[in-house]
Length: 256
Image 1 (cartoon, one colour):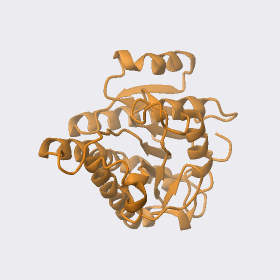
Image 2 (cartoon, rainbow, N blue to C red):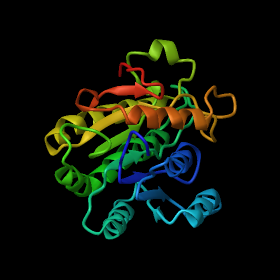
Image 3 (cartoon, rainbow, N blue to C red):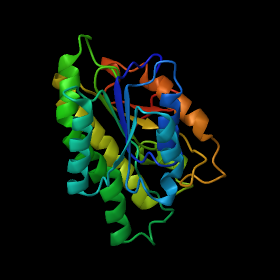
Image 4 (spheres, rainbow, N blue to C red):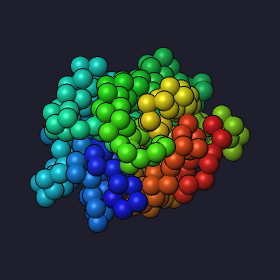
């Protein structure tokens, strides 16, 4: 895509919502990635039809089964991507898959907390670990100085609801388990940024806005198209000083 220049991009949760739109807009750019790896838990399921339609028209789209909560599934997906790349590295990993539930502090229970952490925190951790060798390979092969999504990057789709600093402004939606998991994801991202800087891998977190999707609902104030256009625009500007930072889809830096 123009301004980003990533040769290969992987998106989790790519069968609907923000993930599907990321794939669509990447493909619609004047210089789309050579490979777009569109990952979802059930690529052959009913919810995967739109993605399958895209893949049928674009030979650079590779649909891959990936359940981010299953180490075996993540390992298999990483092997499949490596086979397609044929010795090249992966430039951009977008951990987009996530789950949400509106539940308050008195009603949240053990199962709900564990489920949110497994998908929203452990999932991105496992996926990032599995694809780290390919990200390192891309960074090592790049002639570019500094960090960027063109070179090698991990982007975790987070949420304003995960900002501890802004709880007093956003608590109209308690969503306790979701909030806690996204706060943990932000910490994970900061740790990744610290750990992988020497490898040449940029790591950042993006709040996509309150988006009109199955998760966000129709009362949300941002369309999927607007959100994704903003996200991709922000990603094209990221460099060394942005690694470990938290941004919204308009490029505003957020406290976390």
